[in-house]
Length: 178
Image (cartoon, rainbow, N blue to C red; front, side, top):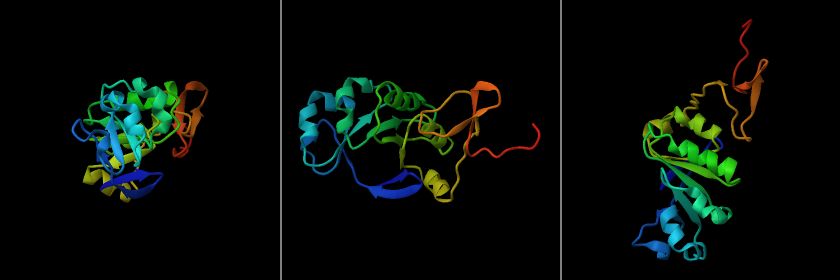
């Protein structure tokens, strides 16, 4: 059972992670790594349970591009808080592959990375760290409110002054006389 954070709410979900031994024969909802999925795509997609794709750091999600619309969600792995490849993968899914479904962050990210992942297109989070769960339940949202590059289209932000490349979050409170 995993705790999922999406749209400000928490839900519990159970997904089985496929491996080379279980393959598509596993029961229930199945999270399949890209490399394993590409070995037998039709076998995974024709199962009775839901199927989701797991993109590990460094994997090329574009190899499964023709099947993206068939997954319950695409999970993007964050193997360490110091590994930024998950941000790039999420952005590739949204901007280059035009994936419109749920992108879920999984792995060892920290609370400070949650708003940044949202800016890259991540829409839900599998929470494995108790301190992240506690902070989100307490309403903490450690967003930096000024940015130097635009976000994925679903994030509302405001141009900052006369600089077209500067952005500020809608959460930014106006400060008197800058």
